[in-house]
Amino acid sequence: MQDFTYCSPTAIFFGKDSEKYIGEQSRRLGKKVLLHYGGGSIKQSGLYDVVIEALKKENISVVELGGVKPNPRLSLVHEGIDLCRREGVEGVLAVGGGSAIDSAKAIAAGVPYDGDVWDFFSRKATAKKMLPVGVVLTLPAAGSEASPATVVTKEETNEKLGLVNEVFRPVFAVMNPERTYTLPPFQTACGAVDIMAHVMERYFTNEPDVAFSDRMCEALLKTIVEQAPRALENPEDYASRAEIMWAGTIAHNDLLGRGRIEDWSSHGIEHELSAFYDAAHGAGLAVIFPAWMKHVYKQNIQRFVQFSVRVWGVPYTANDEERIVLEGIRRMEQFFISIGLPVTLKGLGITDRNYRRMAEKASLSAPGVFCPLTVEDIERIYELAE
Image 1 (cartoon, rainbow, N blue to C red):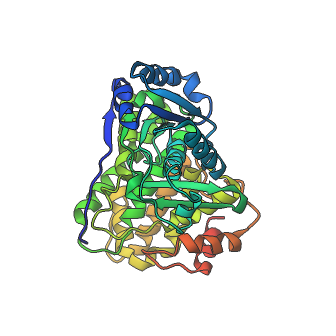
Image 2 (cartoon, rainbow, N blue to C red):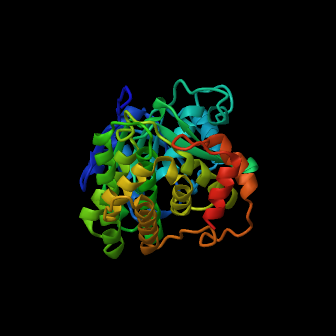
Image 3 (spheres, rainbow, N blue to C red):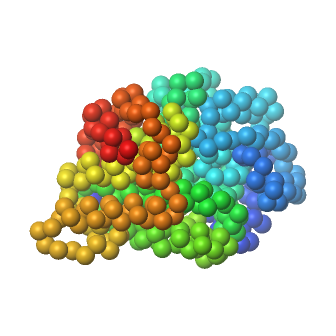
């Protein structure tokens, strides 16, 4: 296990009555906040009115910017930065899922910065400060509500880049599982796979002596495998929704990766699907992760054996490691299919074989840590995902 430091300062307010904390916690953002959200779902559900009333009670002025889309766009981030500067906004309150939160983080980082906020994503500059960000979560998936990460897409160049910086951790997150009851099944399923992917990017490591965090990762993965079908069968099953929502936060607040060397190549490879084809991130991960596993498992076959046996219940038989691994991958694919997601690029509607161009771009953000990946390796992973 590697040495590490760890601090997760985000205050979590979780449960059926958690929305009562929105107003008092938003005081920590300032006297004037940007309310940032996606489409009309928060208005249809009544959550918008709850948030506005909570802010009014605390005499907090509100500036609104909706329109966040999946794979949040840099153009809206620029619009938000200009709006915040013009209106003298002191903090940002994101209401929604990972896209709204990531967009809010980028806006909050861009306001005090003299250059273009894209400089942070292209690694030309490092964010030193930002406006405080608060979250009212409606979609468990990205884990951005307590993570130091954000992802934004630059439409003009088809670039979707992630950024990790401790200043990006939100000040607080309000999390009511009841707010996820109305999620479409596809979004619920994509969220479940996104959560699993955040764990697997940490689980597949060559770092020895990480047994404790291995077990934590396996417990979280098994929880999603158990609870996602229940939530899909009964969308108002509070227990299942609560388990998934809390798992989503723990999957990506960096707790599970401490002492380990993480990978993140599958995310980088999938980001090209989102950037070029606007694929839903969770659905793209359901396609890419099995293909990545098939390509790299021989790098550390014992880790894949452990994954297959402990998470997917494949019986262990001595001297039969490859069969065990491939069966574990098969069972994972079958799980993804069972919750309504594709496991092939064709299932995503991608048939033009733009693999070389995507592989060249992905190689810049996904060089492979668990197993080093060349452009040719990444191209092969896309081929395995056909």
